[in-house]
Image 1: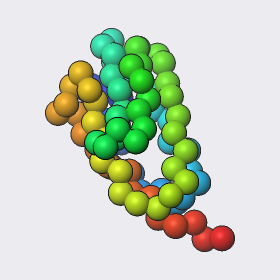
Image 2 (image 1 turned 90 degrees about the vertical axis):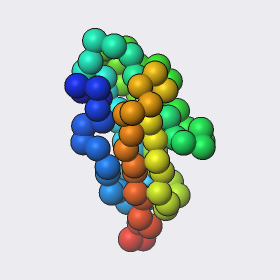
Image 3 (image 1 turned 60 degrees about the horizontal axis):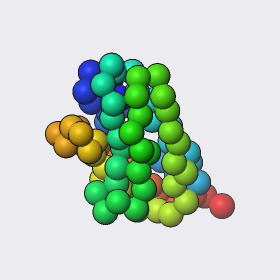
Image 4 (image 1 turned 45 degrees about the horizontal axis):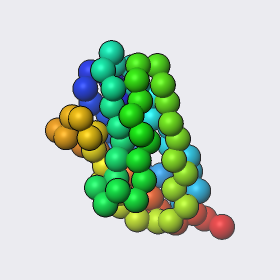
Length: 80
């Protein structure tokens, strides 16, 4: 979270991967899944939160206070 955007934007990861969001902006942000299956909670400057993606799928997310901040996590099955 930097310059009122998710950096990097869209991600493609394997199932079982943990993604960490860190806020580098002076304003608070969230990373909230569109269906609200997961949410980082409000993160102030310098704070971070992590989510582990166990299931393959496509997860669109946004920032609650800044709904124009949007991105997607694409989770592909692991190789095991």
